Image (cartoon, rainbow, N blue to C red; front, side, top):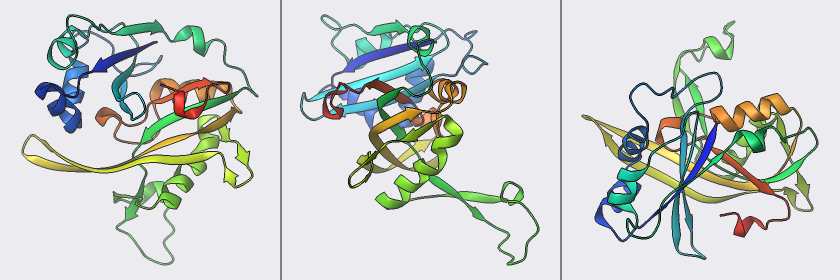
Length: 236
């Protein structure tokens, strides 16, 4: 696996278009790999996320991928072609050092949703997995935090505690609408910043490489980690 970082120039018209449309950014990220590239395999899948840092006034595109990317087209259209290129590092070096009990800062942009059951019979014998229904977004901060806390164990970690409760906060929330072909897509997202402890190394590696939650093609699901010595506000 590889982890890449691309600095975007939000003053450029093409960059504004990409940032405003997860569908367009998804296509741009896909074009960083040749047609025969493995995009979703046993080792991991292509995941991406846009981070905005108000302190440094920077906008970064992060991409995790099974194979090395080429972001020349994004740099030319939405970056600083004469000055800044992208950075790509071997993600496996970090993944191989992970161990149970380690504590990390983390950031995750996710699409917290629930399944709205069509079958609402009070005494239904069907399991939740068998109930057919569309997804509905969690819209309050407390609902979104509970959504992530419920999924922590399955993804090999637990959120650490502090005096006021879980060491977790929602730093950005958005309701995005964009066109996908002839259809309009509505996406509710939340950016989580927090501190975690690894409880199951294999599950945690899988979460880092395969993503957490739905809408992975639209910039959700990529969790990145940083040493606990790094303040959350300086993670980028």
